[in-house]
Every structure is written in C-alpha cells, then in structure tokens.
Image 1: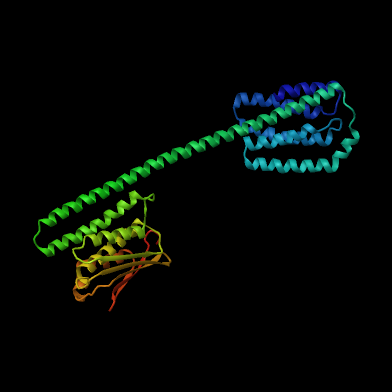
Image 2 (image 1 turned 60 degrees about the vertical axis):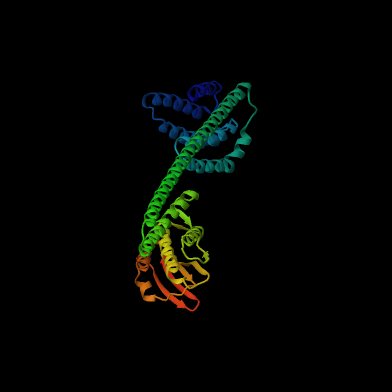
Length: 374
C-alpha cells in the first residue's frame, strides 16, 4: 500500500514540479523494497525499525524543507511512527521515537512554521487531490494501527482472564482435594480413638485405663486440628482461639470428675500455622489432662485459663492456669505427661516455669512461632 500510494504521489510531484518529490520518492522506494525484503526473509522486525525511524526522519525533513504544502499529514505520520515502534519493536523504541518527534515538532514551530505560512499559496485541484490522498491514507494507516493495538490488547486480556480462570479452577480443585485429605485423616484418627476406647472398656485396671484416656486425648488433639483445617477456608492455618476453646471443651467432657470444669481462653494472636499448633495443642492437652487427674479431686468447681500473648520477634507467651491443689508435686514433675511437655517446649524452641500459689498453679511458657521463626 505504501509503495502503490506513494508511487502515484511521486508522479504527481514530478508532473507539477513540486518540491515534495524527495520524501515522496523515498517513501515509494522504501515501500517497494520492504515488500521484496519481507517476501524473501519474513523478518518483519527490520521493517518496523525502517518504517518507524525513516518515517519519522522523512516527515521531519518534509516539515522543515518542503515549503509549498501544508504539513497536517506529517503530524499524523509522526504519531504513526511512534505506534509502529510501540507495536512492532517495543516500549524503549517507542519512547525514543516520542522524544525524537517531540524535538522535531518543537524545532518546526520555532524555526520553520512562520516561513511556511509566508510561503504557502492557494492550491490547484490536483495539488489538493494529492494532499487529500496522502492525508486519507495516513489517517487509514493510523486507524489500522490503533485497531490492531486494540485487537492485540483484547486478545491479551482474554488470554489473561482465561488463564486466571484456569488457575482459579485448578486452585479450587486443589483446595477441595486438600480438604478431603484432612477430612480423611480426621476420620482415620477418629477410628483410632474408637478402637482405643473399645480396648479401654475391656481393661480392669484403672491405672491402665487412665493411660488409655491420655492416649485418646493426644490423638483427639491432632484429630481436631485436621477437622478445623477442612472446616475453615484456610488450609494451612488455624484460628487459635476457636481451636483451643473446642479442645479444652472436649477434654473437659472426657473427664470422669463429677464437678463442673470451666475454661477461659484468651489470645491476641488470631491464626497460627501447622508447625506451631500441633505441639502447642499437645502441650495444652497434657497440662489440662494433668490438672484433671491430679489437681481437682478436692475441688467443688474447676477452672482452667489459657492465655496467649504476642511478644514480638516471632515469639509468644502461653500462660496456663488451673485453680487446683497439687499435693504430689514431685510425682507430677516426673510423670510422662510433663516429660512430654518439656519435649514439646523444646520443639517450639522455648522454655517454661511453674508457679504455685494459694489460688492455683500457673505454667508460663515463652515459645517461638515456628511458622514465622527462621
């Protein structure tokens, strides 16, 4: 199209002996040679470079050295050159062309525009036809480039939307799969709990029955974690207050004590990850199980308080309190439960101390959040 249109315009320039022959003829030669080059090489990027750069230089040359024609069309060609660079080459080339053409337009208005106004004369019909032809062709080229830009943008947007939908579907499938896994793990743990309870009912020894109860509580602690994971929207984090509230409530229901066991849970940490919640839940289970077994036998009403405070630097403080009376302090410290608490505390890279008062007993832990701690 460039070759054909500018061939006709070059003939008109020769016929009328106008001073615009050089830019017209150059554009015709570029259009013809580019067609041949593309036919043999299929290397479109070189053509984009030629049209963007040479198009800008020819337009700027015509604006400043062709004095017998108006240059409305050259402004369209400058914009077209920028679009050709942006679409076919890249952002950097487009920015370079913007800067080049911006400077050329400034030069034209400062040094050439007044001379052009003084030189311009009324046009003959054939001159008006030639200018109109180039103007309409330039407008068509610009419109075509804008259409292609809009088309490419729409295709890219559609592909992005489809990709996001595909990712979302895949993500939903993975989420359902992970929830199903947690559900099955929880069910398997419940089967283990049921088997332990069946075996417990066959045992005569109260001491061994208590060991079975302790084992059931530990499995229950882990089962509850998987239950929370498939019930909540988050698949790798637990709402700690809800979890501890349900855990302590379940442990209290398993108690054989004939007294009410009240629990109070406070936490200024909302959610916590799996690396931390498993040992933390087991710690609470061991503490409360020990309290029920050793501390509340002489009480009319039992109270358990669990408090978690964020201490910063990926650490938190766990305070466990019961209002029981620990008469066998040494035996309690050498029990398997407290040995397990010490191991779990080490797993959380922490430490703890025990404080006994007339009102009850407190365990104060300083622990690291393993899901945040490096």
